[in-house]
Image (spheres, rainbow, N blue to C red):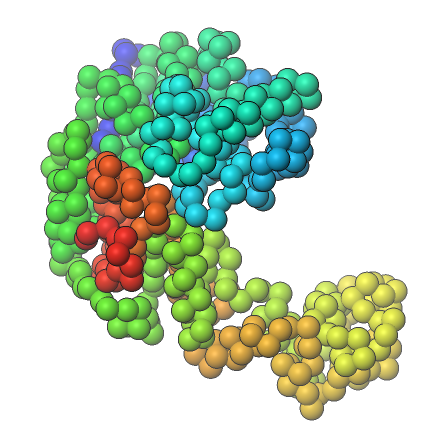
Length: 509
């Protein structure tokens, strides 16, 4: 097979992942062993999608595709590391306590955008440190480039020294070390083809790892879109992506974005500096773009919706609004009503109507009951009486009253019987049940823009408000936010709804 070096530029909805899969399929058809094909990505989601698509096409399992993984996973495996080798939250707390700098609950290697308001000093310092290493720039330069956060560089340097000393003493590594060590080894796997997906998001350090990987393979394909490079806060090196190969192929037909949304997207993307020009076309559907004063002007009663905000903090404001009105939604893959709580309510109602319940359901019910109200002291989900029940048998409420310490009876509604559910949650669930929406699969989703990248929904709601950090970056480098909101609006398959800002810190959309 002759050498093939190609960069695929894929605007929103043009099928980058499918094109990548087609190129991989061509390699297999021409005789390349799938075990000698590497398909790496910045995110686990992208790596998983590529692995699943190729696996379906060829009837292959995960073990047959050893190099379909994230760069970090490949570096982790190549280094022969174990979970105990990797520095974690407990280690950071020890370091922070030793130098008097607080850490929060997050790991130092963040995977999503962060707002400097509310982030602990230690976490923020570590983010800066990892960012300087990812971008391969001096720590002080990195610190100065972030603007005035009223934090101390001397303090930052002291924490970094303590951090590196701790790693050395306890033989620990972090995720940045994994990549750096792989680059140092200068020894990639024996592969014939290399595919890099979402390549616009790779940092300078990660591109150094790609340089090691690309020494051997004859086929090299880099897929992405510089206009959707929104991982600047993690050190994304867009120019490295654009300079990866001389040959560039633009995917020009979107299968997602309707005409009106495409027009909105063009007004944003044309403001980005130093971008690769590309012509692409929307679907034949007209779609719609509307502006709204507030959330309640939007017809949420039917259809699939996704509300996107710049940060989790801003998203939480709208989650609270939805909750106050009894709307069911999902966030980070979890429904707003905990499924075990919902199942307990449904099971209690069924129990009251005479339907017997399996032991697992009864135990779940008992976890929401108070001693002396729902059941007798000494009886509970972990009591011998409950744990010893035959899992294949179902039991009536009468049986539970006689043998399992149940005090509550069928005259009690769930909000009385399940006394451990707090009042606010009870009121929310009562309102949600009146709406009759599907709790297990909510129609409404709440997400940050960064988390929604690569996703889509019929109806998209965009919140233009910015965090203090994002607003400073917007004023300093507008292209960063242009890219973020370009990604946001192009998630819409049918309609785009833009809320008017609630603060004076907002993206002008």
